[in-house]
Image 1 (cartoon, rainbow, N blue to C red):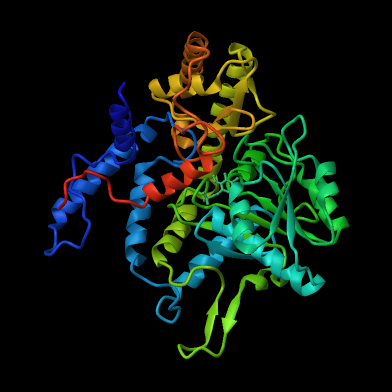
Image 2 (spheres, rainbow, N blue to C red):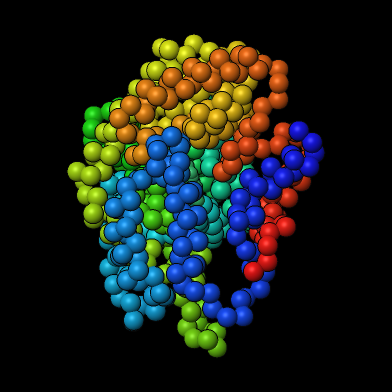
Length: 469
Ligand SMILES: Cc1ncc(COP(=O)(O)O)c(C=O)c1O
């Protein structure tokens, strides 16, 4: 392959429409016909949804039921244009939001205190902010740090980076969960909070929340549980009788939890709930400013204007699924996850399941087999896994589209073929790597951050060489 064709392939991967659609670099002089716009966007949507609908994709699409999406779209439409900042005009937003919080809190045995945010990252970063402010006000902390296991979600690192909070990463135990002794050793008088996950993104494992919470309590600090991924699933899994360790507000010392409605709550993308044990902690994220010429300003969180569509459709998603719907979904997810876990353990000796998973199965190679070569073959066979690093591994986060009949069994067969492929290609460089949100990534170390920044730049640029409109 020449250098040019490699570049071409990369550009096509990034901007697949660059040769087939016009690119707008300025506002069109005259309106483009709606039917045309709709047709082009619908084509993209159908094309891009196709793989997820086959049930071969890890995570990402949690529901997969297009009837449900259609219904949520209808509800969204009713309020898509509404700015819920204007509560005198749109008081229904108060009803929807308060009831989303109440239902989430009930599920997680909370106290009914919370906020609705735009997603997991916002929930995590907002929690971090509340702990920082609380520690500053109550203990005079000026050099804040947060102690969390290496597997805590990276959005916390992002938030800490933005807010000048030092992150102290604790190593994991051999079971790949937080090492609580190591966390204890990292705490000092500037520590604002401890964090654990239920379950974590990388390996789908639940940290020893009771122990971490007890540690936090003994130091008089708070503990956030990242339940962004598991928050709307684990309660149903527990109700079904699976062994789930206590991780929610039933654990004394847990002072906040994030739980994403836009994941296993089956809501549209753009919603999550951040629960606090006390209003005292929540008030830290409130902002009020009485002296602005624009008026008395009050805001509960990061966002200013927000669409009523997402709040109304999240509310509708919960109601339209109901307890029986969530239980049925959790049942299918757990059966699929169990078949996959057991399949790897008993039929694929070259691979090892990481820890003791529930709904998300991470696996790595036992010997020197290159797991990214395994991923290359899985990709070629139409499966989209999430690739991990440190150690190199893959994970399959089971969602409703994966519960279609025979999917788990087909996956195990694909995995066996992929292992054979990796054995054959051993020593050759793999095409895929471990970039969050992408199937493949360049390898290397020193230049990696530069390349990653370049990718972010590229994500905000119009496709090069595409025909202008
Ligand atoms: C455990 C966990 N926390 C936080 C997040 C971040 O959520 P979001 O992508 O909604 O910002 C994720 C995303 O997958 C997650 O798995």
